[in-house]
Image (cartoon, rainbow, N blue to C red):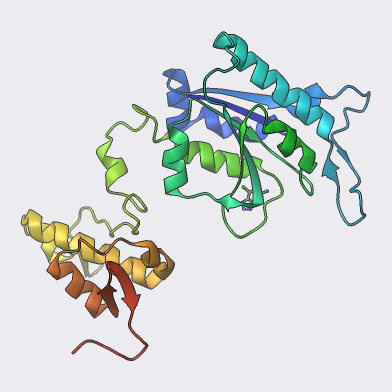
Length: 275
Ligand code: 6GU
């Protein structure tokens, strides 16, 4: 996969040289290029922002440097693949913004399939909207948000997204099985984990995990996933496919106050506990 990041703070992306993602770059699994937006300005002061039309607080990123930067990335890619204008699929342009669609594990898996991702890090109040309209001719444009809070710019969001996507690329995570049994891989939160010693400060590891009964362990872990998700993220259970749950799993959800109706979990009215 090839990733291009455009930012006025390229140093912000330095952590992508570390750990798993840094190793993936060294191993040639991920080609990552960070571009300084200011190198695409033409004025003496290397201006990237201006006041908003219509008034209001803050500054807006000017369209010209963005078009220069994105054009140079699009052209470099076209040259690299020997441009055939009816050519291959357009690269995805991800625009980090609290006004975007929500980033989640499903989107990480989807984007991990792409040949090229380009991230446009906005600062201030955002990028002139015409840039996204114009860019749609060269890219599949996707404004993406990490969650319902506001960051000062897209750089920290790019760190999160590149890590979430990069670790899904073949060969990046040493043991691919660790991708299967983690939070959100199946729409549920992860079960709790324990290691030695089996007793620590008067707290014992749940006995079932020491039993050697792998069927029982798998069921206990699954039910802990249900319990945690119901407690911490009940919103995830709305989407959960409960149609193929085993009887014991339905019972476990029943004890948490959920019935299965038409393959979906339905919260029983408060106080309506099972017999
Ligand atoms: Cl992706 N960008 C910015 N600037 N703020 C955010 C965000 C993204 N996600 C949540 N807040």
